[in-house]
Amino acid sequence: MDNKKNRARVRVPGTSANCGPGFDCLGLATTIYNYLDLTLLKSSKVIVESTGEDADKIPRGRRNLTWQAVRRLLQEVGREDEFKGAIIRMKNNVPISRGLGSSSTAIVAGLTAANEILGSPLNRHGLLKLATELEGHPDNVAPAIFGGFTVSVMDKGEVQTFSFLPRIKLKLIVAVPDFELSTQLARKVLPKNVSMKDAIFNVSRASMLIAALVEGREDLLPLAFDDALHQPYRKKLVPGMTEVFEAAKAAGAFGSAISGAGSCLIAFTSARTQLEEKISSAMVEAFAAHNINSKALILDVDKQGAKIIRR
Ligand code: HSE
Image (cartoon, rainbow, N blue to C red; front, side, top):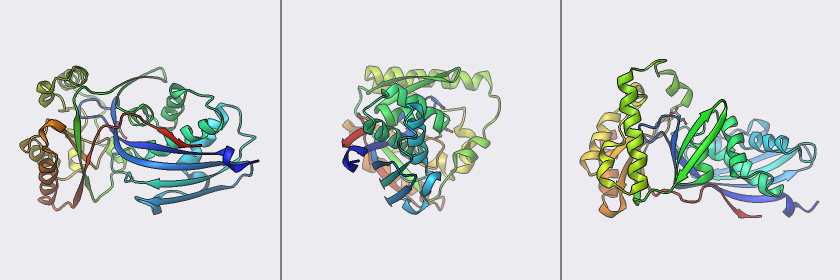
């Protein structure tokens, strides 16, 4: 068969989950991207080639997460006997195990590219269902698929997502420290139960965050990024977290959060104020005061989500 017909290229945004108070339900897509060139094969070979950020850490062969996503989609649409292998070529910019959704990009890229090659049997909600099943929670895969900000709800194993573009032109300043943090470890430090007081703290802020973004109310954002459910327990895993948050706020950010399960910290500001360079230097310096080397990324909110670049 003509190889071109079995081939698609996609671009998938890195993401930041939680956004402070929205633990396991809020997420946003950012303008840092991973690229996948996928060729489906009739033979059972799985060839993985990767370049770019953390390329040497990406598993090869059948253990590769993108291959697992491709295989899951083939099963879902009953085509797994037709295509038993793949050539997976990745060009990555999203660092691994830093809380920028690199595993979600791998899953969403595999699902989106395979779906395109097969003539789009699933819509984006169908892809979200499979991606959530593979990732275990929807807060990174939803923005990777839809772009913008997403609010996701799980009910009896089913996922519902609302995606929207904020009416404030946000700038995202991400301080990327030079150490990895596994999501597994970052979830292990969380308590089994939380107090009513802390639950109310988060429900009120998460609600305020979404309302302020939807209505374009910058004046309400300084209240909206704080969290009492996960960051107080995770701060021992990210040395200097509180000071980096304070430095970002003093330099003019609305607020900051751990990006996903860490290790990155993300600050939010308005493009209008042009404070992003000042905030990024303040964050890197605050990390350095705790002997942590970091680099800063200044990003926008991605509006498109996973996108086919070429058939
Ligand atoms: N919501 C998840 C967590 C994101 O914070 O553990 C992990 O990618």
